[in-house]
Length: 339
Image (cartoon, rainbow, N blue to C red; front, side):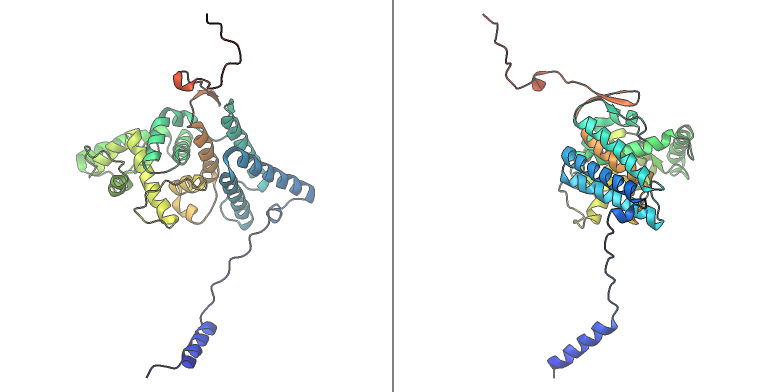
């Protein structure tokens, strides 16, 4: 005999009172609560933050402004909670953001872009602009995300932290030789522009074929030596990196593994460089130098890669492209002098 409705209700009630209730998320603190300064200075920094948000809204749209607001509040919360943050205090983070927004505005207006004081290495990015755009397009990603990863990795390689660039390149060469002669190498796990690991490169075959991004006439790497050789090709290095990123983004955004729709959310400019640089920190929503600056690099390069630029010292100068497709479509207000 099936149990009556009262018995079912009784069991449900007992379960309600005995099972733990999931904790609700704490309310997001206001911006002022995240700024531990005297009132006058606090209000000045609030005004600066809102002005930067408004500037990005005007330059890049509402979603980019919202992503900036999300990043800054995350950075300030991390500072207050003791989690890893890019800066020790709020004012430094906001002043750094102001410099980035100034550069983004200059690029958007086609002016001379002053990069002085910004931790960026465009001399490693601009020569591969075509490859970056092609690899990002092949996997449906914003090109600025991939450019920011290249900048982060190469900017870090320029600094004498850990292995210097020369020592790392020597290790790469030794590892390639060992992989070819012995089948494997115990060192130098990452290579190329985006510092992609050969192990991860070997896992990208199915996704690259799904997106139609792999040349079917070209054999896909099957061994460590073949993967290392492929990663020395700038375009393939970027293609493997974009494929790995796409798998992460699909999982994070709750998309099917085989989803191929283009992704455009500006928050990817934080997630991409953060996850590529340090997945565990990214998963923990920490902010550090590569993730904080990577976000702004992504926004900047998304604008820069739309045009052509010449690097002069610490400044980007726009290059005017001439030709029939670049003529001013507006009519000439002066009268024609042809007979």
